[in-house]
Length: 349
Image (tube, rainbow, N blue to C red; front, side, top):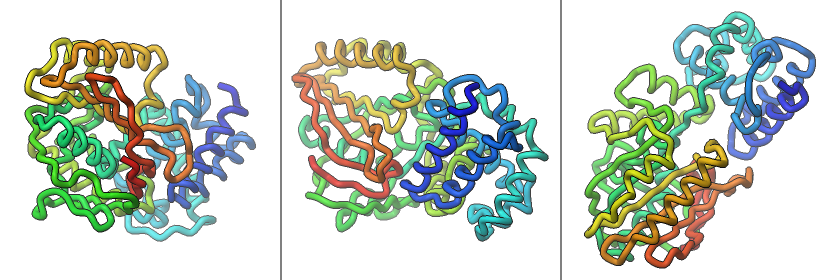
């Protein structure tokens, strides 16, 4: 692996952590970049990693592996500085404790680096909600939900949550999970009648919300000072574990070809995804686009198709876009600018 590119991956991720509200990881990753440059313990951890360290989010793989050890109770000295484990952050002693963990658990951390980052950020549903409501209002049909890159399926269960979008409210007031977000712009289509006939997803490595190891893996990719995100994740996992959706272990292109082969008369099929496009290889992206275009050509007013995407490439706080493309017609619309974790939404729809 190119050492200079590895160093830049840590610095790139440190800047992203600053932009999206993790001063702890911003500090750790900036120091880790210097440590890799100095051939320290972090250089040993990533030695032999195969693949592009920025595109494959190598720094987040490392920090996720460390966080799992902390959450598992096997790094008490470092846990003292992780708010997610009840600690309080102090930069200098925390860095020394992190280096100790990197040395003591090097084999375990290194062995975990081949697995993808899994976040399944449930508050992204606060942005996706506006798209689902728009499809429901415009078609007047029940929704047939199909998600690619589903992970554990937390965003497939978006209708089980309560939303507090600035002054706007949607969902069951008795829901255990409340998803708040800063909201600017007009209200979404709050009066739309929502009916869901089925929900399913696909992922190259699906996660089971009922499995304790899965839950800990997802928790490990939450940044340690963002305890509100951790609490929301745990509530969402509990909600989904009670009635998990079908998630198939398949590449998205082949799965869409199967799921969209025949139009679903009397239903609006909604294919959606959130912050997954970055992780899909280019040839698979092209296959997805072909399958969606072909299915769109088969759509009709009685069997419409919608493609709802929360994706983007700008690392700024509102760097993601919520876009909706609908068939028949194929019109693509920008509905909102969104914080990567769904914390803030600028509604344009």
